[in-house]
Image 1 (spheres, one colour):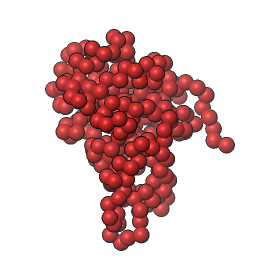
Image 2 (image 1 turned 60 degrees about the vertical axis):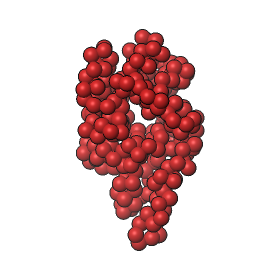
Image 3 (image 1 turned 120 degrees about the horizontal axis):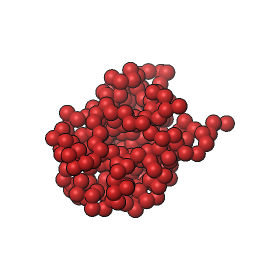
Length: 252
C-alpha cells in the first residue's frame, strides 16, 4: 500500500501561473481527500482524476482556497448520483465565513429551490474527523484573526499547515511523529504568511528538514528557496508518505 501527497498548485493568491495552493492525499494512486479548492485547484483536480472529488477539507475561506467550491456546487447539484454525497469537512469556527462568502448569495440557482449546501454532505469539525477509516487532526494556525485558519494532520504521515505564520508550538504537538510538513513559505514573509527567514529563525534544523515549502510568489521565488537548501514543491509533484500510524478502522 502506498500513500502520496500530490500538489495540485503551489502559488500564493497572485501567482496563478503556479496554481492555487492545494493538494490531494492519494492511496495506491487513488484520490482520498482534497485539501482546499481554489479555482485553479479544481481545474487541476478534474484534469488529473477525471471526476470531482469525493471529499474536501477547507483550511480557511480566502477565495484562492475556496472559489472552486462554487464551480463544484454546480457539478454536484446537477448530478443526482453525487448531489449531497461529497463530504465537505469544514472547521466549525469558519462555517459562518463560508456561509457568508459562498452559501448566502441570493438565488444560488436562477430557477430557485436550491440551497448551496444541498450539493454537499457538510461535516463541521473541531479537534478532527474520521475519513476512510483514519483519524485526521485539525488545529488552529496563525493567519489573520485567531480561529479563522486551520491546519491538518494525518498522524504518522503528513501535516498541511495551510496559510500561516510560523507555528512551532503547534508543530511540537501535531508533527511529533516524523511527518512530512507541507508549509506555507514565501521568499519574504508578512503579517499573515511565513517567509524563509521566519522559518529559519523559529524552526530547528531537524524540523525544517521535514518541511516541503509551497504558497510562494513566483517560479523565481521557488528557485531562490531551493538555492538556500530547502525542499520546494512544484505543481504536480507527488511526494511519497509514510504509512499513517494507528490501525485503520472500518465503519460499523
